[in-house]
Length: 531
Image (cartoon, rainbow, N blue to C red; front, top):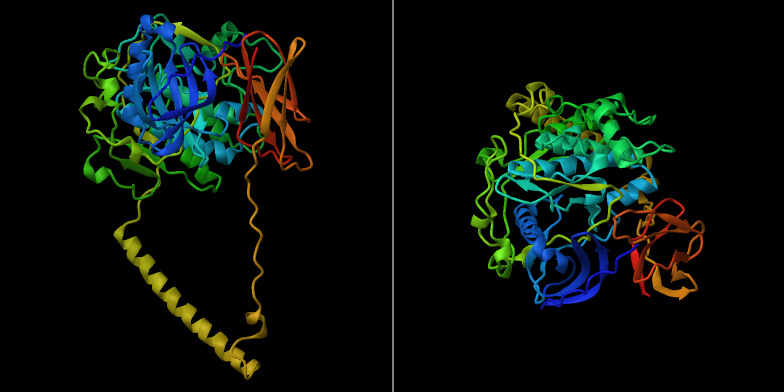
């Protein structure tokens, strides 16, 4: 049954637009910020969670995201504060495109796109690890997509720092490793490496790694398979054996058999890209503690290490008792921890990334007591030994010589062509073909317009939603799903601009996307009916 969203708070400088999602601890709303003018996603803690310790966890999430959100593959947080009604809130980037869980359920990703996303998100996770933070809930639904079609990792609500404390921690079973189900559960950087591998598998297969179509897939079934069953093959003819080996290692049952770091996993994906002759995606790593000489591109241009630039939550949040940290973070393993509280304040108005919405997931979440962070040794040298090498000075000098000789040869060839043309076509400076003007090529856009005029009404025991497709084309269909408090996503397809939902009482909301015949989809549009 869908829980209606809580009342949106009145936030100075922000104009409320519509609800984006509901959850067990917080609701997310779309607001328009007045200065600078832009859409933002505002996550607001539920009032009945204020006394449960969730406020402290909410503040920790704000601090973690403020520390990390300069990374291009992590959702940006603009500010945090406490609303007039006492509820803490986060103002975040609004991502209008469907999250990766919705996309993967519709159809599997291409090998090229899955590898690109895997490298980019692994760079974000490596950045978090170098700052002393474990995400612990990496999954496709927690990877949003910006308006520029870049992945953006979000939902650091159960992230762990050595200085953070919490009464309970959650996990998403389909993407969790075996050690998450031990007593007590264990976490470390290799736990996140497993989740990265499970997420990439989901994008490629269209389902979580141990989900079996046509069979029972309860939480107990999934846990039993995660602990004992071998990782199923992707069974894709376009997927090389090397990619299956990368996934097998990332999701090894024994943490010691996995890649020792997220960056080692990313480099393994880069090698698959090289094998397939794809463009190699650079690994962006933000590291406040990297030496100055390491804060430049590697000679191969495949790993970019940059210094952390941290922002802090809004001053009103820092003054709140709910946001006081209990002590400075300590390192994860040998990795120093970045302390956001000591960082200089950066004006949120200078953050130029496009806003993005929280997403809902199709998973099962259980509560666990807080888990210790295990120190992790660095990956064995063999995992990175095959990285592309940089060119030596001698190679560069030879390259320059060949370039110079090539330029001279090109000049001689052009001169010969001009002389020949004057002989063959006297009185003309160029052959007849050279005077023809190239015809301009039509630019084809991949933009798909959103549906408009969303409307809903109760008809008997059903809620009927209708909408308008302003630019219909042959083969158009519609994807829609009910916005459910449980986070479960059940996409439906309709040939007509109409959807029927059982009336359950309270507010009912659906998201609708226009889908073209070639598979392109529009941004979702939400409609709600308050019964």
